[in-house]
Image 1 (spheres, helix red, strand yellow):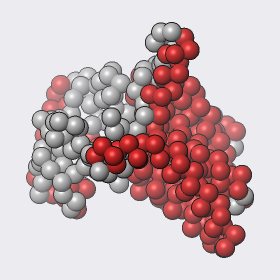
Image 2 (cartoon, helix red, strand yellow):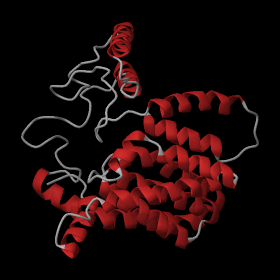
Image 3 (tube, one colour):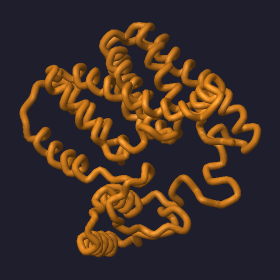
Image 4 (cartoon, one colour):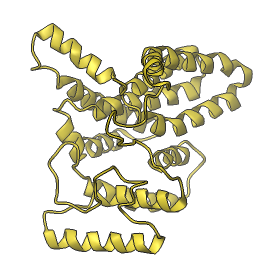
Length: 294
């Protein structure tokens, strides 16, 4: 009743037009294809050569959970697609400041939010960066296109906001699974809680097919939590009824990890920071990505 419904709206159209559910997974499949194209366009905006753009698409295409979800009726790839569109058009708007690019940016952001609420978290750093850049470059003439972005986002999501406010007293809904008490957010916001969530979000990508390796990894991350002074299963930061453990390599579209991608990211960041470069968009882009993860 309260979760953001764009992907389900799109699936409904396939269902109605075809008379069956045989085509509903195409929402995610087309989102995957569109995301790969968008990744190459963002790489181009950052100055990547054509060969590097191909590498960027290949890295995105091989995310294990992405492969599994691309033929499913989940909504993560649909949300990712619209977020990629928002970032690409945001780049265009940052450089041009035109109303045309502002409208495309607002539409992509609005549909991204309408698809999945986690987009608020991942989009905010980029939105702040693009907005301040445009204001710094174009001053008062940037006010109208920025207002247009905000207006489009609100209009696209107004139906959901109004229904949620009418039913739950909040435009974002109840903040938990209805009738279960399973909350979407932490009960505490401390340095220890942030560190625990960062560690666990990193660790769940490291599962292997080997029990002994997983057991040792599990024990190591429990020791790390002892050191930072918080339980890895603290009910204030953990989904009700769930315990943190390093599991076997998963082929389930909701749990598959990305071990190679995680290690690649950890390797690339220090290499990037060690290189001397002219002022450009790359450092700010990296900051926005890291801020979304945090």
